[in-house]
Length: 120
Image (cartoon, rainbow, N blue to C red; front, side, top):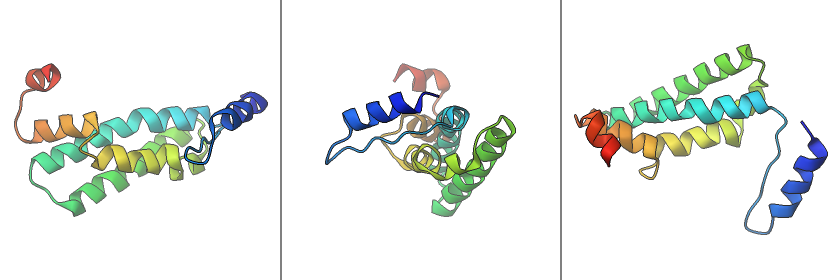
């Protein structure tokens, strides 16, 4: 809510290889950041079940639509979801083998127990 402080922090940490962005839409950034994890588990599960890229694209696209609808209902700016904290974060979390949520979903899809997944 304090744009001047946010811009100060942005300038402090930004350099030629790292760019920090500010956003005043706290509701949008928080809902996107939290709910993309659910979609990532689902995308991983589809992979573990043997589904292909079209299924992954469908769950990510529909997931983004639902996240946006919920966020807007809570007072978020819909444009937040088309930026880095929305679609940007959702793509990497929902497709990367480095994502803990994607890996957990993949393991569930392959039939591993939740207890085993949590232990690893």
